[in-house]
Length: 357
Image (cartoon, rainbow, N blue to C red; front, side, top):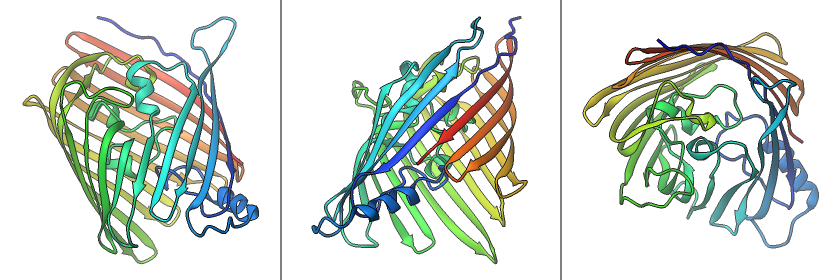
């Protein structure tokens, strides 16, 4: 029997968002990310119009992520990420996003799950589908609306999919005013990796938003098929320590939901399928409860089972707005996993300071 003793991990993340030219700036991957768009738009408006009409604008966001090294004596700080992200428009019909990791201590596939956004979006007329080409977040489940890159708690994708950012092309648009769709074909190899096996991963998602009085419910259905890595449940894929057991032909079906009831939010995902014919399934649920305008708590749970074993985890976190542009987060996570005759227990504390202006 093998066990891993509780360990502590801290995180400090500093982001600086500066608008560099006129026009509206795009927020990036997700409306669930911390407030970014409004400061960029204000700065862009102050810069004045360039006289060229719509589309000649860009914004740059900087972020520094520093963490104390676990188990070091005396405590040492390690830079986990120093990055810049550029988003903007190049003419009336083209948008783009470039994520530049200047330095990171993450390695291998853990790094690729966090970094690699590099794409252009081509659009025609308002209301028509758009085409995204490059490296981008796979449109499966929670990943479409929940920005995991800047969050202490990750979602189920790290085990259910095995990748987050992948090269390829995606068509997205609206079937009607309340129903959105995404259809993507990617390589399944991960960002900045060659397509060396001619594999293609096909992902499709349809979501619909329901207005329930003053409340809102968004439901999504996703499907995926393709060859992707399967990680050991005894490792942490998003931190670079993930052990790849094999590459399996994965079939996945997912149901995801976001329910806003006043200031309360429930975010959930249910995933099932198989790896080369062997069953794989699990769920992820999180509840966000505001204590005041500035402070809220999150509680959540996750379960995942695959051919090699099973994992269960729970967490509680607190978020406090020091100012509108400075957010402090603290998360306590615990997990139990087993593969064969080898169980593992882990406790992790993560602190995060996010500053944006």
